Image 1 (cartoon, rainbow over the protein chains, first blue to last red):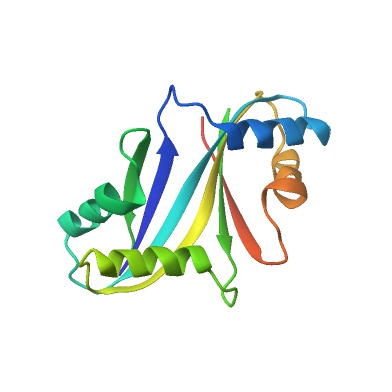
Image 2: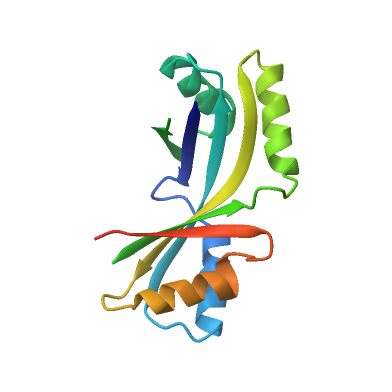
Length: 77
Length: 77
């Protein structure tokens, strides 16, 4: 079973990586970029039968820092 | 207009970050994790009317290293 975890910074949290990307895009001549936020995508290949609670626990304990980050779980086939 | 770029390592490319996450999950007692791959999620807030070609060019020129990474563009509202 595959699961994808999307980890994004919460709204008010400064994002230096996103700022650097934004700056670089402008330097390359791409106008019309209002904002850039950088996040993480973690793809898990899990044994069948891994519970939703286990996946949520992985996110809370390791994959996301819930003080400053949100996470979203997308379960695949 | 929002766009999300998902950047993932190509199949055969070694992923030390994914290995480290895998190892840490096992250390926390999560069994049944077969594989972990780490990627990037970049959220762009773009001016309306930014063309698909422009977004694709951003990916090829800056956001993804197409030698070792794949990217997928998801356009939002």
